[in-house]
Length: 67
Image (tube, rainbow, N blue to C red):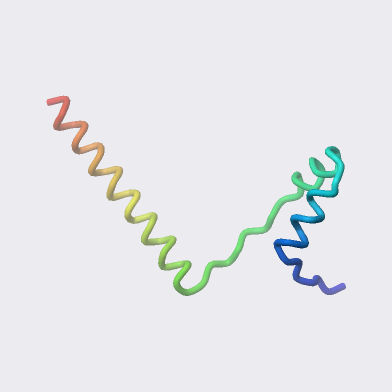
């Protein structure tokens, strides 16, 4: 069985027509991880490095403020 690509508009229409209990059941299904490639992977790693750097900067500034 092949899976067809469903557009965001189609998915939105389907979700808007479901009843509450059907919507809850649909949301409980896990969504598989997306494999990042190219620029998206580079941007994800850049964001991680930036967050670690900023965490260190904030901790350093907090340490200096306490001293």
